[in-house]
Image (cartoon, rainbow, N blue to C red):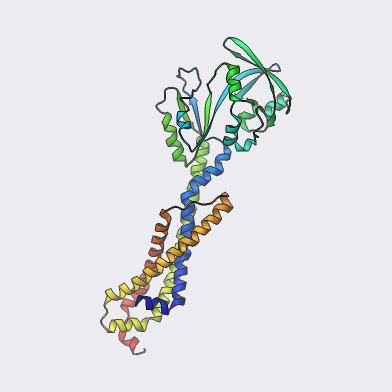
Length: 361
């Protein structure tokens, strides 16, 4: 009976399936995006630099420097991009300047907006270059006081970069060179890191240094708060759009199932005249709604996954991963939409009086 009811009215059934698929496809696309949006937003905001800085504790016995032991949690985490940075005061051209030592390749990964190339070992911030009249190819002699003595080194400027913030006032050089010049081999002033994931993951990662006697982790809350607010707003928008799409699909399905019930009023009347009770009529409508919900949910998930890939490539310039929990959720939403839409027609069918219908009235 179920197969016959669906196949004899293929047109209306197809419309009902497409109506469920409409809402389910939007839900599928947005659920896939929602599951992956934290990582995507984190990737997009990585251009703004580190979201975690590890600094020495004021009561540390390492004289305000960090060692390899302090960097162990960063080194042991494959999803973390990090770099040690050493700062030192120096004299150059009769004025005080600040030196920063770091590995160029690591800083390129942490600060993509700095536009560093792999060939640049020494670069000057734009403000420092203007103040000292530096240009690519310039040579500068820097003097650093270390161990009650003054050490000096002549460095050649490979590039001048507009870095933004305080970094524009610093002269950057290889970490090992500055460690040697300052007499602090194997030491760093801070560890800059970019932890992948949502703000809660960054906070959880930072708690690894809570028990460290020498270092403390400082979450860059302005950046993580921006990520958290953006994620919250995006998910709210996705929830509202999904609810609106499911409501539209339910209304369209309700109208289609109502038309199906009207077309089958003589069949329903005959069933009731032959002894079918409320339970049998309800089961028949529930079975049809179930079949329409399953077909619409599967079709909607497939369409939504394709839409999610298109949105991911257009907005985030990368694909969206397949979340194994989304197909089950979308199928459940499709079934719920169809079953809720079938309640009205089923109630109408249960109240139908068979005699007038069979008489042709």
